[in-house]
Length: 171
Image 1 (cartoon, rainbow, N blue to C red):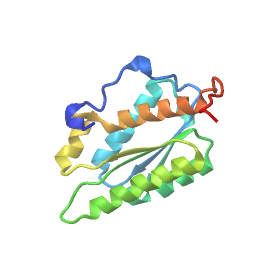
Image 2: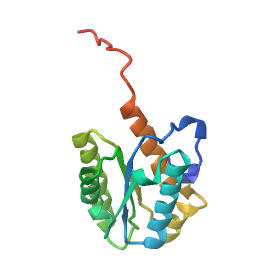
Image 3: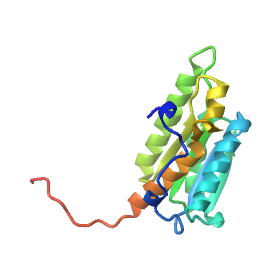
């Protein structure tokens, strides 16, 4: 859903499981730090709010968005963590560079999720202007870092669910 229609920080607290026994990695870009570090703070605070322990949150920095998938993979492989959240910001410029970067990052994180069977969360802003980025990094549309943290918690909880029983699909 477009963030114009939804505040990224609005969610029902009762629908978020406890993160007390979960561990998380956060990979954040060092490009557009005025935006990405605001995403990082909201993500970190949201994880703590839902019970994650500081000692179970690992943070790594990468130069830019293109490096997020490899940074996420390295963080995942070096630490015993349940999910990796990637945070960044790619602002549309005069060329189509942003489209190539955004596609590469989203595809890279999806491939990691499938390869490792663990959540690799896409928390990258893809705005058309710096103002739109600021609006989604604690501004009028909330904070994508909060949304990414809630997504990570819910996906880890889903992965940890015990199967209720085998269902047959007819064969």
